[in-house]
Image (cartoon, rainbow, N blue to C red; front, side, top):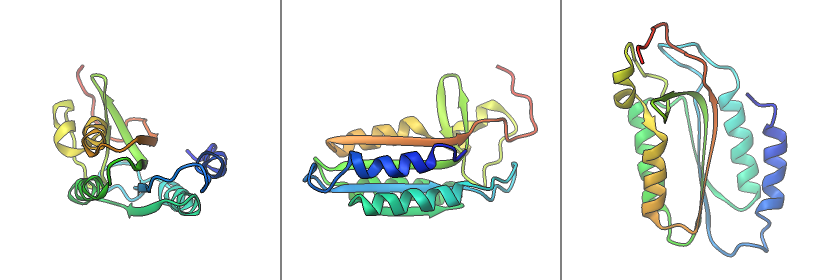
Length: 160
């Protein structure tokens, strides 16, 4: 999960040098390890911490959330999007379990309970909803980085 992390963190310094962009920079960083109903992960919180530190060094105001349940993830996304100034730079980083269903990507909170495919939208945070929120904020640049473990974290067989 973290093989590209040092490269990504170092690259941030070159992509966002202080002199290049006068716009304000804001980031939401989410790292989920401690899944209640799926395989626990080892690296996401560490990865989120490294990314948050690198973003702060690159001049970002950073909000970090770890081991977030659905309510906390949705609340963090909402609060982040509502706080964005127009014409700023917004970056969202997520590390944890993710799943794709019918071409849509979903970020899985630590308390998700899904036995059937139809439950996924109700138990997760949709990548598209984050993108719609960023679009609504009218920022000048939006970056979404997903470091998802995309194996099937649940012991169910979805019909597709």
